[in-house]
Amino acid sequence: MKTTRKGLREGEIYKDTYERPTCSNCEMVLKKENDPEEVYAVRICPECDRRWKELHWRHGDCARQEREVKIEVQMNSNACLA
Ligand SMILES: [Zn+2]
Image 1 (cartoon, rainbow, N blue to C red):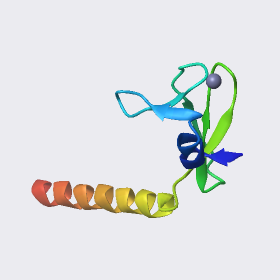
Image 2: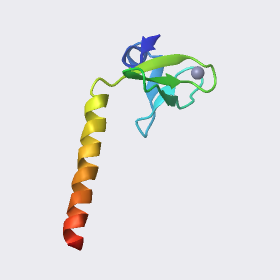
Image 3: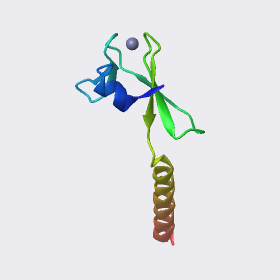
Image 4: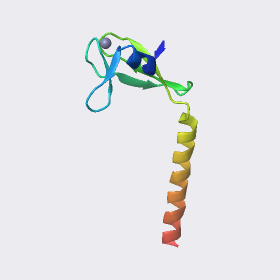
């Protein structure tokens, strides 16, 4: 499977006016499928079923950061109640 970056470079994918990756053949916005076991998401064209993988190396970091922010908010709200 090619990466979305390669697909964009080779003209198989382009970004529409909303910056969404779109299949050049079908002019369909690609669907996104996340695999929690993998370090990448898969972009699929709903029309021709072509697939590209979208790398997101810092995915783990993002998830952790999000959790930390939530905990912080929780702590703050408890402080307000006390
Ligand atoms: Zn397509």
